[in-house]
Image: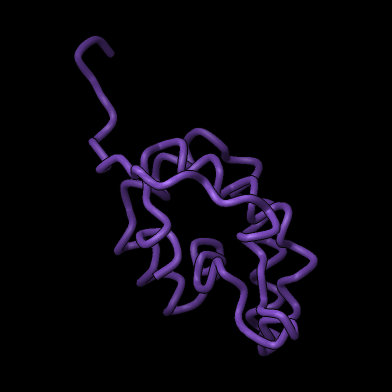
Length: 116
């Protein structure tokens, strides 16, 4: 509708991470990925609900504009969370999570908002 605008998200000044930096797990591969809790946007759990509520402007817009991607990530990550997720299990989703990250960063969201 005319006059309707997306709620404003404070613009991030830092550049978007590369896929390598986004999925970095330390030199020995034994640390949580750089994206930390980003996957919680797609987890069906109490933590996921809290994470989405804290970042509702971002996730609401993403789900509205990218419904198929959001649905696919939620379906895949839901299974991992129910099966006692280990951070290593997320490695196979790094590229898909990275695509979602780039879209959300395009909205102006900061890494701190997306990863904390």
